[in-house]
Image 1: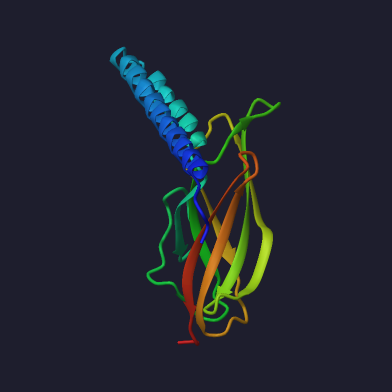
Image 2: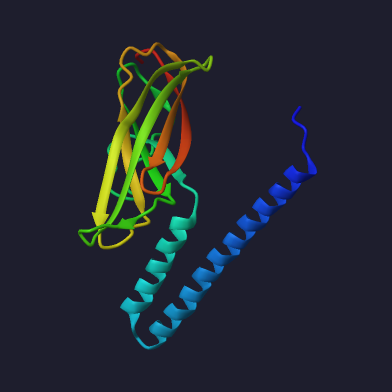
Length: 198
């Protein structure tokens, strides 16, 4: 068992305090933007009000840890953010592709020399069997780059994995998302089952 010293407790307390202050600052940022947006809306500056909130939300999102907001097996390629058809159950026949709809929170954006805001992330995968053994893996399984004038916070992608040759049984699919600009990483796991042809 690891011994916890008073020095370690002090460091933990400082880390908690810093996280609390960051949280308070973020909440203040959104409250200030909301007040400014309300003033603009009162003056019928609806575009300005919307942009004030959008910019504040983008600033807030950049302070958050990288997080997978949603990872859902889908029946087909999604049409857009929130526009996907979820699979009723995570059961697949041999050779059937695994399509995952993924929403991301906390991606960083950076303005570059072309004047556009850029965001970039990569995805690694691991296929794990019921014993916890990694059967297959790949770094940079997917690489995604976005550029535009707005720091879009409704970020999604879809990932398709073919598991030809997988025997019937229980598995876990682990995706690791790497924000290359923000130097942040997060993982999500999806349990699923392969069954014999029905």
